[in-house]
Length: 360
Image (cartoon, rainbow, N blue to C red; front, side):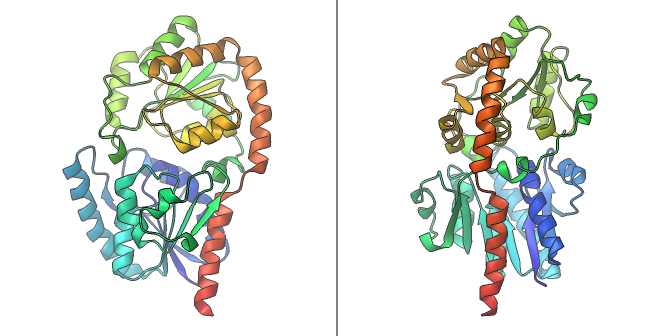
């Protein structure tokens, strides 16, 4: 059977590709997983018992650091792939893996929901054989990177459907954080500070701080769980709010925790998607809103804030009427989830069909 190489380079991709790996293995495909050293990622791979070969690390915030880490990782991947001889690469627009696969004439199937990630897309999509993308994003947003229409397949969903649709919540996550089911639980996610597409953002303080201050003032008994992305964010939150917030020092089962949550305020993408399609009132603020924010807002599942202060005000309004908001959101989310495509089913079909065509 063919050997499929899957490059997993962010925590989200662990969740996204976990089912794909299992499906391929059930069909007796050999699977090679590569990864990199990156905050939360290694622990997530351990949690999901995904064995991967580590190649390189995240390059940090500077352009020089990103370039240097990418070049170093390319050489490490070259050694691994030359040894393993995979028949196909599957990635979520992994630019370094794309270059290695292209150089070794390995077919590359990629998926992406991030047309705004200009640098990564320029370095990966031109080398992709097939691209799987959300239907809600205009085709032109992908064609500008050099791929043709016939090599694009779309799905009507957000990426989080790939794992939320099959979620079996684990209440044990509450015990890990010393929480109870009856607690008023609020989940916060700070901004993505190190991605290439955020380097030009001017952020004076963590943009969840206005929400933290307002909730602490109006709901002093609320259990505010804050999920930092990087070690620097973890240290800053500990410095400023060590006694007021619950700040996990290791990855937790976020989808399960969300099922016990009354509000999600996220300056992010993936966790906002998870919360929204689980029926948790979700407030999003980013200097540049995501397509998925608009997609979920149209379905009544998410609120787009105009500023950090606006996000705080909307969050407070929801908490003051949380039972009504939760009931409404649960009903809307159940209907929306039933209507959405499963991105992994689409991806599996692309992989299988590629090898069928290759034999004919």
